[in-house]
Image (cartoon, rainbow, N blue to C red; front, side, top):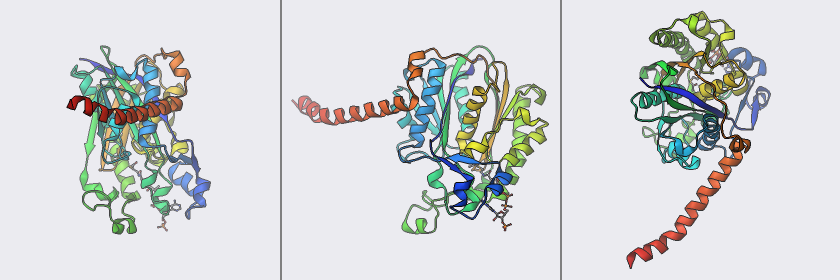
Length: 372
Ligand code: ACO
């Protein structure tokens, strides 16, 4: 049996902070309502040029550096997202290109649960012996899909990206077990009804604001409290463990009350639960990897820690995974790490643009030469 150890991790969030007080100026809401009902105080919102691809690349570069790997060492890239830069091409290929990796890449969409789905998928490629180093990204620039006039949804969401490198290992670390669930009968409770194949984008869909997220908050809340505890417990039992063995629960950061209820169901004290929703809001499928990175950075996860990740989201879907951290390696490329990730990403994008321009210039020449 080969295991997939988490050998590297990274996160990237937009610079722009939108506070509850800012939202008070935009819709009929209050800081007090948002904090008591959700636990959110502020969230990050992407500015022009900050996209799912660019945040993913910044997070991925950190993860690669921590793993002591170069992009060329990657065997596969999996990107979980519901907000790709374009419908075509898949954002996973943009990320592969901007990183400078030379491997396969694909997207996984499972609502806010996507990162756990992607982690479980990556683990299968490692367990089968097919691949050694896999980049798994959870990224979301969901703010353009948020109706900033709808107080029921706009106070909840934020943008960001998290990434890990899963590396083949013989010791039992990484994803020890997982549970994946889906119940499409609840799809209508959280959806973007227009702009897809069923109702393609037209002036009408835009006038009817169908290109924005619509949510039945109460139904999603009930669903979340129904599945979170069960899924986490099932994954723990599948790993042959009990809740006493769990050092840290990393839940999807959608609502602090949902997280507290799940912890209570599992009999876990809150000091064994990681919460950062106050600073980022709900970053959808980026929320679990961002929380994982911050938990490591804050020393809440040690080399021998057993971590449970659990999420729920649009679909409706849910997923949980038990992860044994293993060695928390120190970075090997000190010089490379010293260059800020954003600078490296900009350099990579500039090089790609130059390559494309050079290609466009050379192509007619090449065609003329090969015609002869
Ligand atoms: N500010 C002030 N009042 C508000 C706001 C707001 N931002 N939003 C709603 N209200 C009002 C409502 O209109 C309602 O008023 P009414 O009683 O006069 O009708 C009142 O507050 C209570 O509304 P509820 O919906 O009962 O509030 P609730 O306590 O359920 O909280 C919330 C709403 C925060 C949306 C909650 O239901 C929730 O978190 N649900 C889960 C949402 C979720 O997790 N979504 C994402 C999951 S998947 C993913 O991550 C993409």
